[in-house]
Image (cartoon, rainbow, N blue to C red; front, side, top):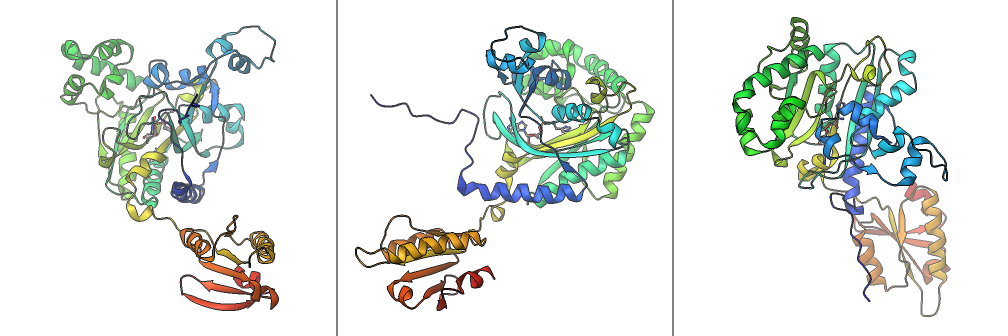
Length: 446
Ligand code: HAM
């Protein structure tokens, strides 16, 4: 019987060792830049109560309706209620259960409330880097496990159009640091909750004569959540939507003035943008400024990042009875960044400082043992080093050193052992020298 071959689940990727340096570069640039902008890293669990996501993103959003990855089974239900094994009491939370996080914002707001950040500071600036999970149909740039770099600025002192502009500018700054160019920043304003209601009335009014041309899903969305029609990928829906022209009619004078200031501040920072009145975003929590950054190199899933304001969410999740806590944030998709990153950013440098080659005569292993000990000393001193674990010819050891792009090769043979030195080859310069065995670590540490 042949044994079953296992593959990674559809819509997930193994990030292989040869790809990891590109991830490290992005992550380390992100840590540096985000700290520079005053953001502090936060790590929340990879799963939360399903109800948290439903409440935050909206029960009619595609993510909640179609893409939530539930942790199924009795154990998950027990985890949701905090009950121990063997206790079979059922509760509402247990039935809703737990889900893998489809995005970061809901969890961060949950943590913001739970840890009483509003009492500690006027503006809390968080960032996160990590995996998100959505049960979507996989295609290029659309995965079931993907990674985001996200920021969330939350607090009673977050109500400033300059913060909106700064957050947008930060997303652009990150993409530039990752070497991206040719992307497009689109912005729009949904306004307050009341303005959003106005917008849905205007949209229904403009769409009602074309209802029969919309797909069945969109006909359902017309009453339940008319905004979702604007994101529909169905060709005939797209055609109807493309003929719509929406302006700023839904916005109150205050919301319009706020949006004007955001645009003015972006211009002040020399950030090119386009106002896209059809941009509404697929998650319910957004108010006021929303934005999306697209890249033509990505094909149909062209958003490399997106975000916006969500002034009502802290209150919606029970954290702000007076309704005075605002927030804004964004998330960038790392896999999509990698898809459009130019070639010169893809090159990886080898991290190997030295490779040890050993030459023992038949039946002996003195050089091998000395090399094994030196390897350990080199690594303890912060020098990245390797050697062959199998006895191999000089030629094949040199070949491996070459493959690993080691900057130096240390040769230990019988003469070296007898006279207490090693032969050090500099692979870049092509030079070779004898080095006292006691000096080799100091020399390589320089
Ligand atoms: P989102 O637009 O759902 O927003 O996702 C943000 C970014 O994550 C997308 O622009 C894309 O680059 C990446 N992304 C999303 N879904 C996938 C997928 N299935 N496969 C690969 N990449 C994907 C949010 O998640 C909001 N939480 C952003 C935010 C933060 N708004 C305010 N604060």
